[in-house]
Amino acid sequence: MRSGAKIGIVGGAFALVLGGVGYGAYNVLDGLGDGGGGGTSTAADSSEVRTGPVTEKEIAETSKKFLAAWAKGDATLAAALTNNKGDAEPALAGFSETAHVTKAVITPGAATGSTVPYTVKATVSYKGTSKPWSYASKLTVVRGLTTGHALVDWEPSVIHPDLAKGESLETGEASTASIEAVDRNGQVLTTEKYPSLGGILDELRKKYGEKAGGTPGIETWINSANADGADKTLLTLVKGEPGRVRTTLDAKIQAAAERGVKKYEQASVAAVEPSTGAIRAIANNRDDAFDAARLARIAPGSTMKIITAAMIIQNGLGQADSPVQCPSTVPWVGVTFHNLDDFSMTNATLKRAFAKSCNTAFIKPIAPLGDKRDTALSLEAGQYFGIGLNWQTGVTTWDGKVPESQDAETAASYIGQGKIQMNPLNMASVTATAVRGQFLQPYIVPKSLDNRPFAVANPLPPGVSSQLKEMLRYTATSAEGTATQAMANVGGDKGAKTGSAEVDGHATSDSWFTGFSNDLAAAALVQSGGHGGDAAGPVVAEVLRAGP
Image (cartoon, rainbow, N blue to C red):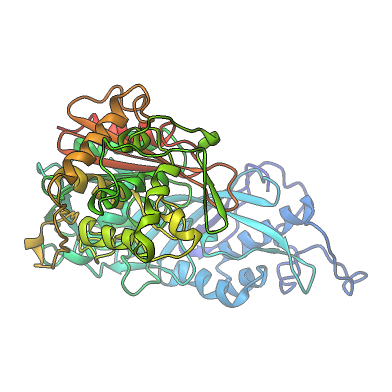
């Protein structure tokens, strides 16, 4: 579609409005009754099923017809111009019937390939109250598999970019009371100022709005497809009386986390206070809007060596200053494991191998465990670091997984690969546990708010925490430490560990980094970011500099 065209819904009665650019003699209403034929077939060629990519003309005509039918309020006809009429028709009908959109102007932009973007400026009206509503979305034109006609590739996001399969738009009195979420110092937290907190604030509202004494307002929202999920508010027509919910977040640290993730695409970070377990920040910068900082299930690479080192020390396989072997490669049940660029070290200690992130030095010592080597890491992670213990943080989180393993997967797990699944919140907690010497379950609202049970784990045996901190400090401050450059501008008592995790199908490894400064621990993931110190490291450093 060409710029200048607008499709409008006027005064609650649907009508077509054309801008002054580019339509020429083409009447966008022509052929709207062709039953979804895509607008290019004639009587002479109606039996021919076209194949191949859609043409520029088909893209323009089909998108115009679809938007015109939608604007006209004819959900049946608009749906017939898609490749999934059954799902499209009720969704399109709901735009006026349940979302209560009474006026709208759709302004298309220039097509990119077969995708046509457009902006929507609408008015939502409910029981005498109206409010403007603006957003942008897009549609893609494809060739129908059976008819060969050009059709709109139906996705719920055609109606609104945040709408997913199984979800719907609705306007009315909100089902939950509104809240005013504040940080630990009483500063109000909003999605406008802290975009990463959108999903968290929605969850807090659903769980604690009524407990906080708030009253519902009139809103437009997305009904979650998940019965346990939180609805997402898109527009507030009438504000309810918010109830105050105090969180453990720190506005200063959260702001730093938001800045940090903006440095890289697909970046996520979480920060935890070791002395209490309080979550101080969670932030993401992702094109899919996924809250990977608390929900991802991804191999953490060499940051996992914090738990591996603790397991080695506790099982009498080594100490921070004891000698270890760090050859360039090590075989394990038919698989050869390598160090980065096949480097090797002489006169290595466990601390130096940790700082240089020598993979082989964290695989070779495990052999003497015999049959226990397949379960030792899983036990260490659960019993001492709280991984997989059903955390009750106050919002939905994934609390990590370190399963039992066998054969080559056992060796892979000790360097953070294999079937291990973590996210930045998990790794921030792992670092906090290493620093404090005991796991304290992360949380974002006080336990007293709903008396939910917290997960508990055993304290690390005497001497283990001090050795882990020694290794983390050395990695962040020594000339050979892989985290030294990223942590150079971080002050206080500090330590860190880098990691990179190879992912099937990705040319570049995921970048991981975890560290602490004084009483703040943070971990970051930048998917396809490469070495840990290069991408995730600067994100963590940004957060730690905002801490105590």
